[in-house]
Length: 200
Image 1: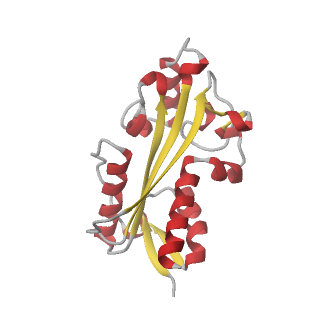
Image 2: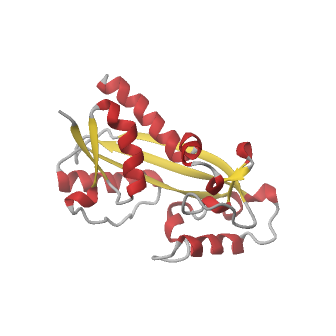
């Protein structure tokens, strides 16, 4: 009998990614939309706080163990911005394109060294709503913000995130390669290792 966990996101890509990784543990990952869980206000000041808020809300509504992630882009020249506001950098309902355009405008004329950036992902697992010891895993992916967009794959800031080891942007990587390298892939890998110890 498969255990059911809820994923605090409506993003189909994330649900599929998580499902594939947790399948071997006999865990079925279900999107919170399946339970009509509403989005919750992300009032935290850090990725960790926001991920816990989302996981706790999903666990409370569904009564199931919950996983949530909070992720974003930190740019050195902008003192870590857009950070937790990455998805709404250009405004509350900003599109990926609007966010990218604002980022590039703020970095206009800035040299490569100061264009260094990293994607951060914090993944949180709660056994239940009141879990006092959530599992927290973090992944970090280093890169440089390009001056123009390149590549059609991915989403968010992928077309302007240059990955030096691959000599391409994140949006030019195959889905599989991105999963191996990315901040989310790293955090998921750590979660799977911890689950192996706990669930055997």
